[in-house]
Every structure is written in structure tokens, then in C-alpha cells.
Length: 254
Image 1 (cartoon, rainbow, N blue to C red):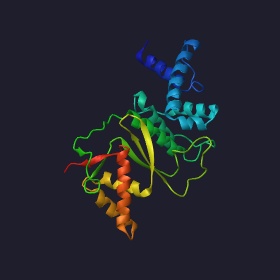
Image 2 (cartoon, helix red, strand yellow):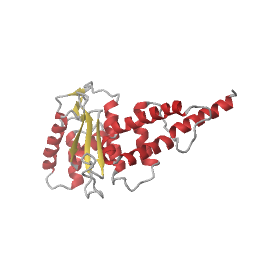
Image 3 (tube, rainbow, N blue to C red):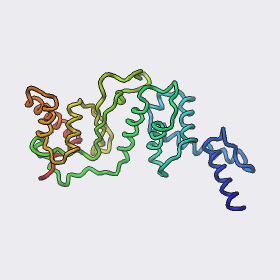
């Protein structure tokens, strides 16, 4: 068989596996045999997505879910060959390629991102270490260090509450602020925070030389708060709570 002919058969074979409804199988291959590959590949992808996006799966009925998975499988050109990155490819598909459907819930993209974050943190390679960190350091006088396995996130929808029986039709007036983190027991958890704590985390991530007190003083100025000490005291409590969950590891050694 010529190389060109072999490549054509390969392309026809894979096109059929991805979208059998629109791409016939190459001639001469028994349908029973190629059907094994059709089911195996699709079921692997579908099963991984069901486990990686359990809330989204629960929102859709079987027909709509499989229609979406088939569309992803047939149209999306993955940039990664790694099986664990299928969820990231699916997120990219939803954000850039999927045509919105009537059955799609409001906030679908944010919900998908939130579920992807949970999986991404679960398999992240970063390790929690206290090298260069004083676990008992003063959180106001020193620079609080965040865990590399803690991500501060902001969403327009309350993604951590969304479920088949709770699907807001429009975004609430107030955004949702979360910290999603993996603790020392390798369990992925989330913590809902207020806008002030979210701003505090952002400032500490942005500037490694900023002390906890300096960050809180800046926030008090931004708020034009008449009593900065109230913001500082409340911020200290927030820092201590974040540390109790392992989201803050301590302070950086000077």
C-alpha cells in the first residue's frame, strides 16, 4: 500500500471514530470491529468528563449531555496529548467553540472553570514547603505567604452553590469570591471570602515586600474608611483564619 493511501485510510479511520454520523468508515473494515474502537474512545472521553465536571453533567439530561460531548469529541482539536488535560481542553471548547444552546444554564462557563480548578489543583505538581517561611511569624509585621496550592477566584455567579435545583437565571448583583485550595491531606476545599479579603490576597500576591499591615492600610485608604484600625483588626482576623486552613503558610523570612 502506498504511503499516501495509508494516510488517507488513517484520516478516514480517525474521522469516523470522532464523528461516525458524518464520516463513513474506510471500506473493507467490519463494522463490528471498528465499533469496538468507536465505543472505547468515546466512552473514555465521556467518562472522564462526567467525573471531571459532575455538576455540569447533573444539570443536563442524557441526550443533551451526549450531544455536547460528541460535539467536543468531533470538533475540538486538542493541544495536549495528556489524558489528565482533557478537562482543560473541554474548558477551552466551551469558552471558544461551543455554540450556546437553549438548555445551557446561565453561568455555564464560570461553572466549568470552577470545576476545572478543582481538578487542576487535585493533580497540580506544586508541593507545600516551609522553606524560607516562618510558620509563627507576625502576620501584620511580616509578609504573609500564600500556599502555592491556593487560588483566589472571583465569579459573577455563585458557582460553588450551583446544582440542578439551583440555577440562577441571571447573575446576582454581588460577585462571588472564593479561595480554592489543596490542603496538607491532598484534599481540595473551597472557602468563600468577602471582597476585602479577596483584595488583601491580591495585594499580597502582587507585592512580595508588602507586610500584612501595609496591605490593610492600603485597603483602608481605598475604602476611605474613617477608622483604619477597624480594617486592620478585621484583616488580621481574616489572615489568621486563612492560616488556620493552610491557605497562608506563615510569613517570609527577611
